[in-house]
Image (tube, rainbow, N blue to C red; front, side, top):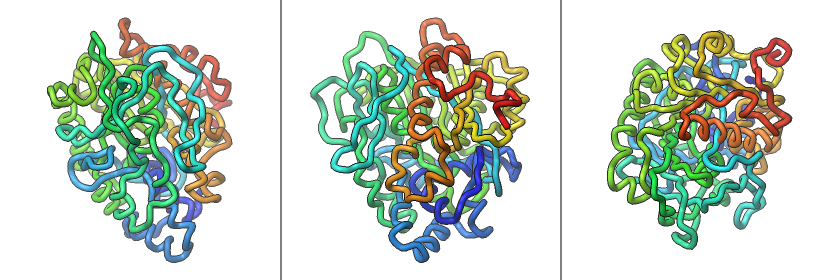
Length: 435
């Protein structure tokens, strides 16, 4: 749910976690998923200008705002060298807004969540994937994206930086200390041998955000047998305007369609292994969820969709999907998004669950990297749920995908998704829960 934020806190988290919160608001409505840069910055200035201003007034504190991996220009990049695909979304909302639903699932054995592991050469940590497979990561040039995938043990070498250096340049700030974070995935590892093609998950970011904040989700899914493609939007272009337009949304739909068109290429399989093109899920944090639901209505190649605390817009807000779909809602005591509540009354193929005491960014990596975000961030943009918000989200998404993309292609029940997760609810829209 949206919460009041300070200028400094937003600057810090917007650079590290992206301005994803803003991503949820559509055309100035108040159905967004959380505070956006527009909520604290004066109207007009771009995010880069806001960050630069804050940097001048906050000194070293602002330096920790250059985070999240993103890349400028059309092709999206989730890796160190890939260029991001042009991304777009709806307009950011000014003031508190309701975060959209989102859920995690798992392929293979389901666990109650990844365990914590210290990141290399730094005190910052990310959840360690707990699946049976080592995880590989590599750029996929033909997709202008980065792939996380089950890897062959003992292959590849080194680890991809959590933050792309280009992000620091976009925000005009040094990347430290987040640049010390490294992913668990092994760079350029060979894909694990398999007799059957693997299910695919395409992750995209929220509006003016970076897909890197879902790195732990990508690694968790890959460790359980999924191939995860991270498709980054054009953050350099997005930060030049606060609100997305119809053209922005159409561009994002075009990017998603182009991604689906290219997944079957031989050069893609050579990097990540064979893909099951009949088991493709789209999803992500904040506005990415609305794009995923809309694509499920537009393209029959989408077999499942999930929305992590993002509102739904246009057709996605009124027309139920016909494929298994998931909504995960952050519940911080504020009223839940009425659009989502209404949708769930006539969406037989959609399941929704909620994370209690969670704020919008608790469904990303943010709780695990607060040491790099500054002391004010935890109290302004994150909820009491803490790191469990990240791992519970991954567990929920994994369980959802295991059912949706598994042999039965079924919709998991809300009770099934939250079993063993005490800080969750199977009915996020109940009056006593939503506030």
